[in-house]
Amino acid sequence: MTDAALPNLAAQAGWLPLAFLFIMGLAILAYVVLDGYDLGVGILLRTAPEEDKDTMVNAIGPFWDANETWLVLGVGILLTAFPLAHGAILTALYLPVALMLAGLILRGVAFDFRVKAQADHKPLWNALFSAGSLLATAAQGYMVGALVCGFRSGWLPTLFSLFIALCLVAAYNLLGAGWLLIKTSGALQQRALAWAQGSLRLTLCGVIAVSAVTPLVSPHVLDRWFAGPNFVLLLPIPVLTGLLVGVIHFYLGHLPEQLRRGDERHAWVPFAATVGIFVLAFLGLAYSLFPYLVVDRLTLWQAASDPEALRVIFAGSVVVLPMILAYTAYMYRVFSGKATPLEYY
Image (tube, rainbow, N blue to C red):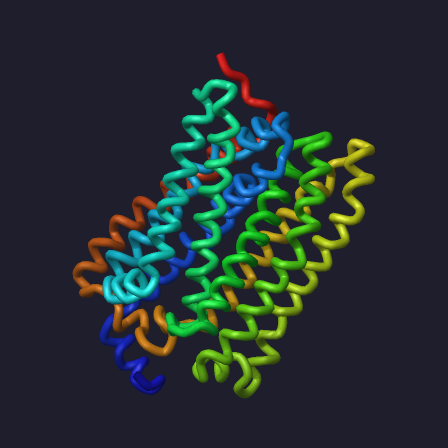
């Protein structure tokens, strides 16, 4: 479809596809940030000493299950509001989606069983919790790489997707380490600093790789970024991303001494800056792909459900979305403060 035909199709479909695209984008971004940090903590669990693992699990315990609500919302919107895109995307990503679900199920089972397991079985469930977190994260990274490549086949797109999978593991580790800086103290907090320092470089490589490859894959994306004044108008996205990377690097170098003095005023900065990087990367990718849900193949108006069906779904979304937002805000308020080791009775 040509760009000239898009306004006519949009006028026929109305504003509802745009509204659902916004809701779906919000849900995906919320999932990536919120479940990203607890997946990162789960991955880091495998390298932590045994005496710290209960505290790490407690740092995400009240949140991790609710964080996955955003994934359900995002996939639900894709299925009901954009069924053609759901079919195309899930067909192309059948294996990584299955692996992601297997990882999420494994970590859910391991999380519950480790609480009730005998002491000699607990290391096994810790290992399975970490393995499930790693599998789910790597699968999500592979899906991002495949989406950027327009679901093309071949060894180059596959290698790129595998590289993005590795980079997303590092990015979630960075998020998880930043969360531990806020929620823990003492030796574990210092260890989280080292984990964050080890993850920053590969995270940046992933952002650069996605930013470089996306315009090369699609002439449409290349024009959106570099035609006319677009490059100047969009320059704040890479500039702010670079500044946030610099902020994280600076504070990771200065926080060890501050934390040893008991000064935690800036412990939140690495996590907040990492969230900022995710938001900027998401906005850049969303701008690059719009209005396509499958690069250069399927627009959101082509993939949208019938207008009558969209109105019914929208009415439900107007009720459900504020409830999820309110519950999430309330949960994080109630369970604010430092995590402590789990106690079993």
